[in-house]
Length: 243
Length: 101
Image 1 (cartoon, rainbow over the protein chains, first blue to last red):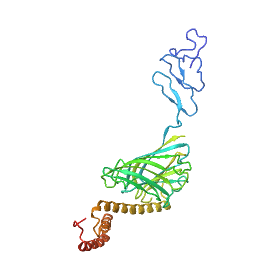
Image 2: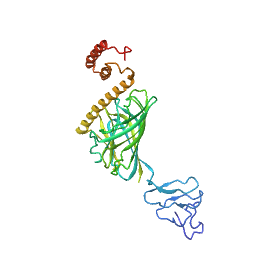
Image 3: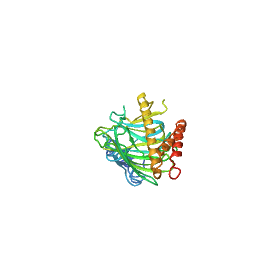
Image 4: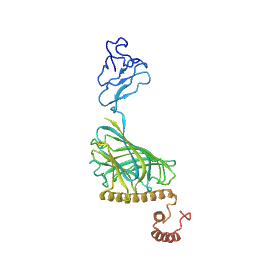
């Protein structure tokens, strides 16, 4: 901004057309400067916003506005992990900063036909609970021919499918929800819906289910794996709803 | 690196990704999981086979046949041969109502 006082040739303050700003003061210290309402109108100050906020465009004919980058109640993508002949895919450090976590899993292919499973940890992933009677698990499943209901109580893991996945299939996908896993509750385990091609290579199965640790505890880490062999591929996106 | 591959982790609190070899304890757990997987698969396969063949449940050697089928599927040919001999003897003594299953 250039303001030249006592000039007989220039306006005071110097206009944009004259190479100036058109304003005598920037009005708000540290504020973000924007062009005027026309190409030659005085510059505008869009303010600073609050700490941590980001500037969002108001379009071609208005100033933008400041908004929270991580607004309470909005979904945040926290992580993307891609399995590549991996034994396990783990997410640790789950805290009460997020009320709900959602894990969107796509294109899971096991190395050999195997069941897709999950475990939880109460020590941030130092170990995952795998006792023979650690989990309750129930699900309903259906394909083109049949409907099934299954209870896998007193199990060493939570089974996320009904019958094993084909090792040649593609598009095996899960949507898994965890509500307040980092709060010590007895119902903070996962519930989910999925669709996958079963090991016969014939049936697309849809499964909805729920599972939980057979103990009231904080679950601050989760682990995904297949019952036999490893995960050839699969994309695991973790989202959280900010508390 | 074990035959099971590595463990991949992301820590939400620190934002750090890691990829590490499995510990001996974790490898042992994988082996237990694999063993349990095959036990469960066997149970599922037999249950399905028996359900599908309910109409033939009068056959005296149905369960032996299921076992034989499973052994064949697992590639355990010697055991299959042994149980197959038993089935053949049973079938010659007690033929199924429709002659086969």
